[in-house]
Length: 366
Ligand code: FE2
Image 1: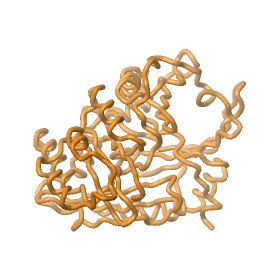
Image 2: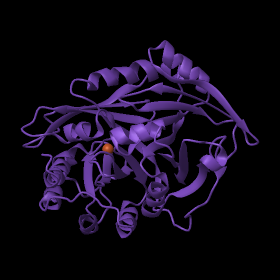
Image 3: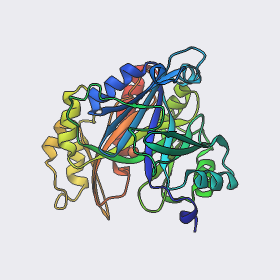
């Protein structure tokens, strides 16, 4: 029933507010293999900001920075550091999606608006999500331009090959203690999502830190939104560190798929993307823990690259996590190659958290 009223076709874009959009766009372009496809700024009539639109296969990033101190982009960046402002969804009817969301209790950020240029018209509207993050509904079915009216096509720094990143698998948020259920209910009520997984602090804990997580999804796999909250531990959890440095809830990581994680991660490492280390005993444990008759991967190569493996009744997955992408220990990326498994690598949480804690300790935040 709800799926008919709130049909979401996919992630339309992820928009960052950063301190220096030109340099961040260059970094994501060079390091991750994105191409700049569109630009908006003072030259195109936008006074207080510049935005670079980057694409790689089905992934679209918008990197926005302020040109003036009075810009809300500058305020956001001062407060949160470089962060994700907007997780936008493609929908067939942006005004309809917005109207339904508001009827179901969502808070409006921007009423439906139609932007037009010679490439057609684009309809969009935005609602509030966790912290200062928003969701924009975008109907681009009648638009054929590079990104949106107000943007011009650009192709800076595009001599790069891609790194094989395909599409967004999931977008994870961190929320405050006690708020996981509130936001799970929000996505159930507003979007009609259901719960795919629930991890309690027993499953996700180390000697020092713990977290709880619920995964909300659209029922079809296009949109998967895990929601983390900190749990009681001996020291400061990675979620608490995030909330402290981001000054509130926000996007923690974005997982992106590849068909060839070995090729993609080799390429990313060559381009100086930094990944979390893996504990020495991890691959020895793995040989015991998993059924290697169904896993088509060279464990020595995975070990050289630091790629993690997990298995469940539906299949297996290969995954790896980057270090934080900006000065504050906030947003990072995951690269994932799925073979049947719809899971999130719960078998790797222990090793992963130990790796995160080593970095936290080095930052003096554990
Ligand atoms: Fe993930």
